[in-house]
Length: 148
Image (cartoon, rainbow, N blue to C red):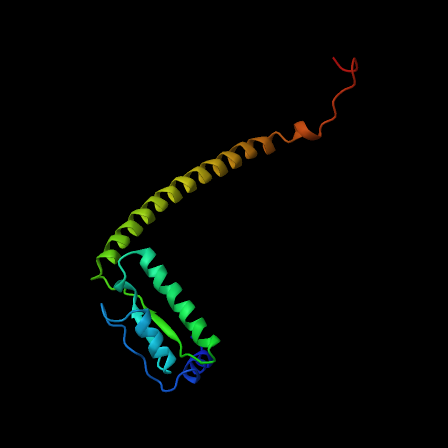
């Protein structure tokens, strides 16, 4: 993030403080209260148990910030704490899925490159033989009944 962007975030806050995202405590309501008081509010993404609930929290935050702005307030920015540490079981399972998909794509890449090499090799080999018989392409053919 550029220094100017950080400065813009700080200017929107009453004091340079962040309400820490506390598991099972922080939620959109607490985050909105923090933002309305000029402190950057935050909540942990893993506080929700499904994608739908997480999306509902994000929608609630967007609506809440809009309501604060419509009321004439200048709310502080807000943040979501995304946990991507290896101790997170979702991270480990997704890491395995990514590894498997990457391996499959590597095999597909090797297969595709092998075919490409085969095609180019055949093209050069056959093209070389064709160029060796190039006289066929620029010799004049005798007229009908001319040469027997």
